[in-house]
Amino acid sequence: MVFVLAAAPGGSAVATVAGLTGAALVRGHQTRAFLVGDGVLSASAIAQSGAETVVCDADWRWRRGGDPMDPGVTRGSLRDLAIWCQEADKVLVFS
Image (cartoon, rainbow, N blue to C red):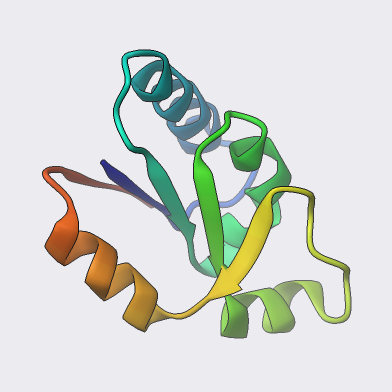
């Protein structure tokens, strides 16, 4: 399963993605979260769910500048997201 998060912190999307990724992992699903736009601001919260968490590098640099990466988070690109989407059974987008 691939979850794409583009929503800013403070809304229900972040909590929903964190909850769904955690529940999917408990049920044995391979779960990945790709964060774009304002979604990169919630990288730590999503990574804590245990899902493989990747942020769009360009959005990270734009919104978080020189901040070090959150634990459990790696940088990637939209190319990575495209590959994940081809491999996934389900892709859910939250914006």
